[in-house]
Length: 159
Ligand SMILES: [Zn+2]
Ligand SMILES: [Zn+2]
Image 1 (spheres, rainbow, N blue to C red):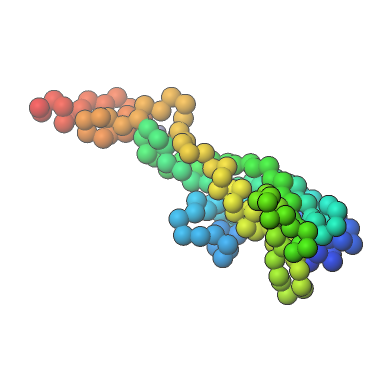
Image 2: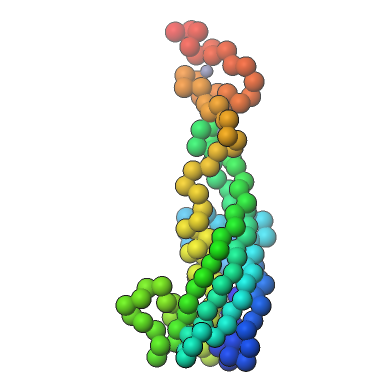
């Protein structure tokens, strides 16, 4: 579970231990969603002054990318540190985009960690991945994967 009524947080800091499912509605078209079980969210959610709530924790999960050299699918384990400040309507600072507004849930006002988890997860995904530090990439002439042993290029020899 990743949504918490503010009343619950006010009663005492919460140890968050939840998972953002790869099928959750918060993910959008084109997002690099986590593989398998999803993003594991672990941390602490507490009151940070009047009408303010602070979450500090870690996101862990696996993400799929493509090796920039040989285009093979690569699964990378990702760990992302997250620090988010939420504020209610009275205490939100319009000038400060780092302070997120609270959501409305069944239990009234609540902190919904999911949008921030999605955002931080996506921001931390490496732009380039490599299947190995010494990936040989693809043959520029025929596109064969040069990691799969000695390559005698048929394309080139026929030219
Ligand atoms: Zn590669
Ligand atoms: Zn070749």
